[in-house]
Length: 152
Image 1 (cartoon, rainbow, N blue to C red):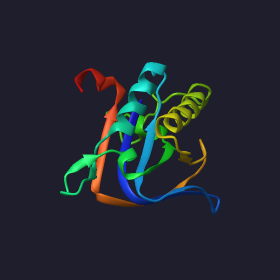
Image 2: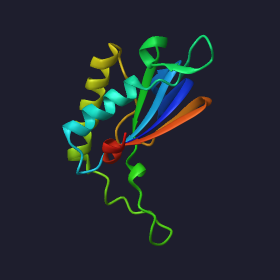
Image 3: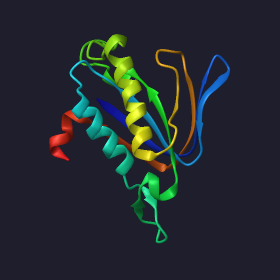
Image 4: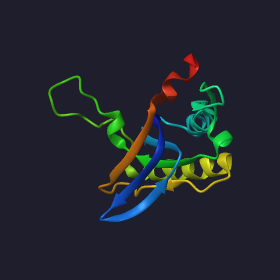
């Protein structure tokens, strides 16, 4: 499981001209799921996202987590995070999980994040052509991959 976490002052997802998810201060999280991902990977990543201390404290230091600032999450499924670009110019997405695996994992991630934050998680629509708008704050962008969890 791979995630791109962007600290934002606002973010939204639009599908067919309709806003499906919108937040103010918080995280825009782009998440990619691969076949090898497990519930353990999902739990680890959810804990890391919600515990990530990248919001400024009273001294301007990145010491506060999402819960400390009352922030929200916009979670967007993005299979292209597993693009393989080693050969040629057309990316291969063979590592990305197919919808029968990815959709339940994405839905479980929403539920776990809601439990951890005590808030409704804003989302896009799985598999849709989504338009994402964001105001990256900092910019602060963190990349996490559950295959690297033993190194963190």
